Structure formats: structure tokens, C-alpha cells
Amino acid sequence: MKYIALLYGEPDAGPAPGTPEFIQMLGEFQSATTAMADAGVLVDSSPLQPPQTATTVRVRDGETLLSDGPFAEIKEQLGGYYILDCEDLDTALQYAAMIPSAKYGRSRSGR
Image 1 (cartoon, rainbow, N blue to C red):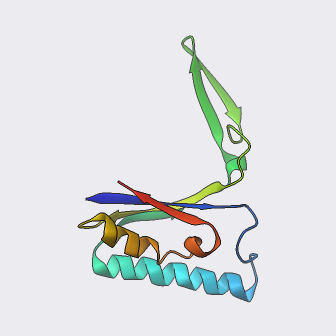
Image 2: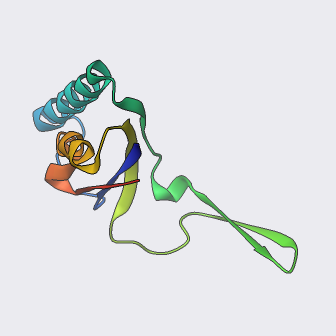
């Protein structure tokens, strides 16, 4: 069964880029990703661009409306995802707990 772990966090949560703590966190992401790949459960994973780079698409009365930026002010931001192919939810949750985002924000898993 496929599960997706969505990585949520507040914009300034976690180590600041360029700090030794940030470098350590990147290493933890690499270790978690490698462990999932080695176990054969990793389907895909990727960070996302910040909400400021988004384009919102709306269709009203047959007209497509585009606007730059996020559709709403949000406290937490979706920063990335992992798609996992696991035998059950408990297994997917064990892998989601390995993702460093769970320390600084949240990692939500569902199918």
C-alpha cells in the first residue's frame, strides 16, 4: 500500500541554514532517505519551494484566474513529501518517524 508523509513546519522552525545544526539535519535527511531506499519502501521524495513561489489557480464561470503566492496566510507550511510503499500503516509510521521534520514540525502520514 502506498502512503504519503507530508512534511509540515513553521517557516523559522529548525536549524538556520548554514549552521552546523543545519548541516547535521541534512545528513539526517540523507540517512533516513537512504534507509528507506535500502529497505525498498521509498517510491519518491522531494522538498518543495516556499509558498511565496506558488501560483494559485482558480476557475470561476469558465474563466481561469491566476495569482502569485499562497492562497492563504498559513502558520505551517508544506515543505516536502515522501511516498512510501509499505505493508501497513504501522510500518509507514516507523519510517515517517525517521524524517528529521518530525523533530521541528510534523510529518503526517496517510494513504
